[in-house]
Length: 64
Image (cartoon, rainbow, N blue to C red):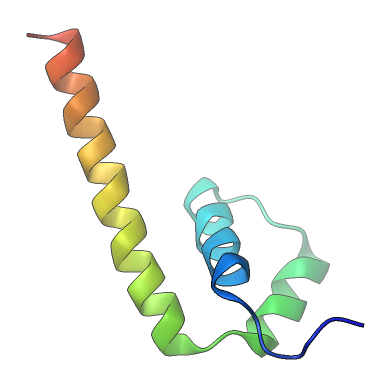
């Protein structure tokens, strides 16, 4: 059986799926009970930064 503490990868996957808005109910309930709120906030900020940076790069590439 898996360890009760989530890894950084588990938290990253949780945040990534939340950006898309798609997540199975069972996975959401299981991960929601295990993840640390501080990790979620940090991963969320990193995810937003990566998303904004990717969008800026896309805009500069499409409209030079």
